[in-house]
Amino acid sequence: MKKLSLLRKSLFAFFMFVIGLAPVHAVDELEKEDLKFGFIKLTDMAPLAIAYEKGYFEDEGLYVTLEPQANWKVLLDRVIDGELDGAHMLAGQPLGATIGFGTKADIITAFSMDLNGNGITVSNDIWKQMKEFVPMGEDGKPIHPIKADYLKPVVDKYKAEGKPFNMGMVFPVSTHNYELRYWLAAGGIHPGYYSKEDITGQINADALLSVTPPPQMPATLEAGTIYGYCVGEPWNQQAVFKGIGVPVITDYEIWKDNPEKVFGVSKEWADANPNTHKAVIKALIRAAKWLDDNNDANRPEAVEILARSEYVGADYDVIANSMTGTFEYEKGDKRALPDFNVFYRYFATYPYYSDAIWYLTQMRRWGQITEQKPDSWYHDVAKKVYRPDIYLAAAKELLEEGKIAKEEIPWDTTGYRDPQTEFIDEITFDGMKPNEYLSQFPIGLKGADVVE
Image (cartoon, rainbow, N blue to C red; front, top):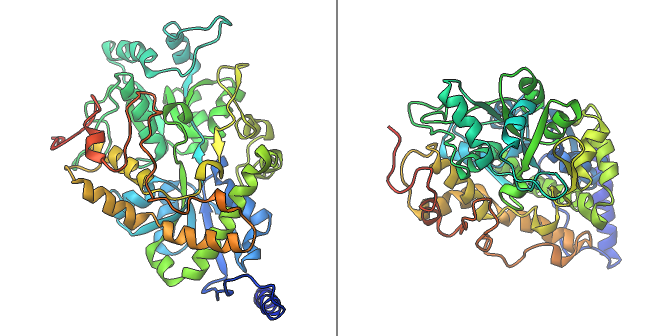
C-alpha cells in the first residue's frame, strides 16, 4: 500500500507536468520510505507530532513511526546505532557527539525545532527563602525577571552550614545545563567545572548540578533530592499544578529567543538518504508553520494532540499553561508570555551557525572543551554539524509548491545572527567572535585557562 501511494504521487506529478501545472522541481526518488524517529516527552517535540498527525510526512511519501525514548543518552545511542532514523535532540547533542564529549559520532542537523520553552523551578521551601530578597511590584507580585542574585544568599547559607545545594538538569550537553549555569553564574553562584578526569561538572561548585530525566523532575523535587531544576515543558508547570514548586524564570528571560531543540540524524544516514532527509525537513517546516499560524490559533488543537499518552501524556491544562501564550509562576501568578513557545516565527526553524557557536562557547566556558580553541575551530565545527544547505533546499521546494511564503525564510543570511544583546547579564554575544565573547564573563574559563 505504501509503495502504491508513492507511485500514485509520482503519476500525479507526471500528469501535472504534462498539462503544464507541475511544480518547477521534479519529484525526487526517496531512498527510504519507512522511518522511525525518537523523541522525549516534552512539548517541543510538537513538530514531529504535528507532521505525523496532519499527514505532512505522508504528503512527502514517508511512513513514519514516532517512538518515545527513556532518556537523552538512549535516544542518541539509538540514532548512532541506526535503530532510529533520526530524533528530536538537544541542540548540544550533535555538537557534543561531533567533538567527542561523551559518545563520539558524526551527527548533523538541518532543522531547529523551536525557540525558548524552558524554565527554572525551585521548591516551595527555597522559594520562601528567596522571596525575602526578591523585589515586589505595587501589586504585591514579584518583579520579573527574577535573577539568581536572590538565590545566592540561600546557597551561601547552605554552604555555611555544610549542606550541598543540589539542582537538576537533563543532560550534560543540554540547553538546560547551559541555561541553568548561565543564570546561576550571572548571580554570582558558581555552577562548577568539568575536566578531563572529572566529568561530574561539580569542580569548585557552589550549586551541584546533576542529571535527572525530564518527566522525573517534579517527583525528584518533591522527594527533596534536588532543590530546583531547569527543564522544558510541561514539567515546570507540572510543579505549579501539583503545588510542589515555583518556576522563577524562563529561558526567554535568560536569553530572548534562544534555540532549544533540533532534529538530528547521523551524517552516515544523511549521506545515504539525501532525498529522504530533504523530504523529512519539508514535512517538519510545514508542521512548525502550522503551530504558529494565525497568531497561534492552532495551539489548542496542538495541546490536545500533545496531551495524548503516545506523545507527552500530561494533562491538557498543564500543557496549555505555556503552549497557549501564558506562563504560571507562583500559584495564581499567570502572566502573558506569547513567545514562550515559538516554532516558526523569527526564522525559528533555520539552523544558524551562530546558534551552534553559542553552545560551543558554553562547553568551553565550563570545561567540557578542556583547552583553548581558535575562533576558526568554532566556525569549522558549526559548519560541519549545522546544515542550512539541506534546510534551504527543502524550503525552496515548499516555496515552489506554494506551501510557504518567501518572507518566512532567511534566504540571504550568512548563517550568523546579528550580535545578540538580550541576555539576563546584558553581555553581548557575537557569533563571529567566540573567544572575545568568552572573555567577558567573570565566572568561567577563558583564554588559555584549564581546570586542574
